[in-house]
Length: 450
Image (tube, rainbow, N blue to C red; front, side, top):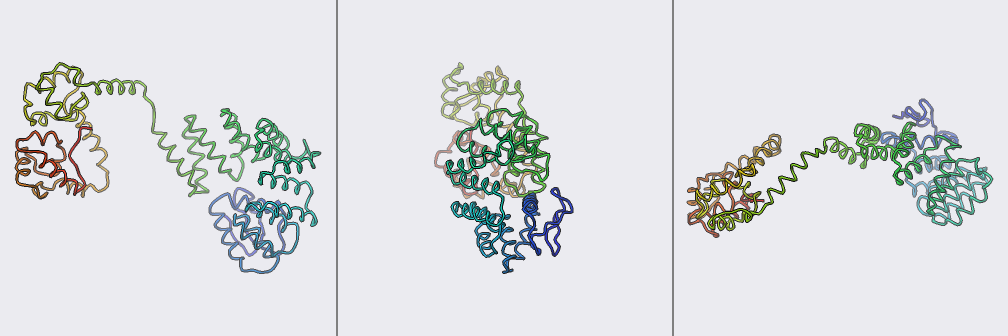
């Protein structure tokens, strides 16, 4: 966490412990210090909030020096339109034109950005840095020819300047010359081994090419430095998860969330990792499930049944062995013309397959009991299910039929199917629709065989 003094932000974290960055003091810090301040501000949400408060506290200052400092602060925060307005009020100097160019570039005013970079030369800016930034500006404007021309002007820095090779690699990547870009990124690392942006682009390229081992190595080099490179940590976590190394993936994401607790991608990915940790593939279990599914999908027409049994099952929309697991003996026996002989036929078929009537219902009830033990609204659900069917304002015929079936509560009613109710004497489609409507009014329905 940064602490504030009258002079500015004191870095008390991973960038430069105890080093004071004085942005709003009497004189502007060197460019290298401002760059380190920028890295620190973006290294955590708390740092960004603290720095934003400090910038806001200086917004009302109107001197040229204050406008320059506040303009740079706004640029660091990504408030680029405001930064342009403040910087334009500052006295002409190298820093004014440089940061004004950077802000203008971000808002897509590329020609003005190039003009301001050119003006910075008159105030002592280094030709190499200005040319590199002009090349980057033209590249971002998709004027690749102009970007290439700028880089040709400083071709004598080949094998000398890491930034020259980085900008060249960026341009080649935009043009689709990926192999050449990779070579230049590698040259960047030869000249500057800790160049995080070059490491990131190499890691990303290796990942795209399927060389996950190399990608992980590059990402690990990035995240070993401070402050943490958020995108590198997230991408590394993805690779670890793909490799089944969930603990390492989680460590990467937790590191992101430690400093950026509201990072949306990290939050979402953490949930995915935690879900993946609990998942495993049991090949033998899957084979058994597949075999059982094939059995349950077997049509009942494949079995030798009496005409009466076949007709009853057809009217009840029971077509497969799986359908029989979703209905009980009492439900079958309650249907018209379905007697003990037909029941024996059905039970003998199921026994041959190691199955029984109502088997799926028992499994569902067991699963539901485990889920509902800690489920929300348990008391409210119980009250609805224990409600007497006489409270549903049904017709006399419908109420009598339910009494014959010994159905006294809503909970007992919703365990019955259309077929079971229709199988009761004097219970027709009109009564069925009446019951369905009454249940729908309280958000419930009869049980289906699906």
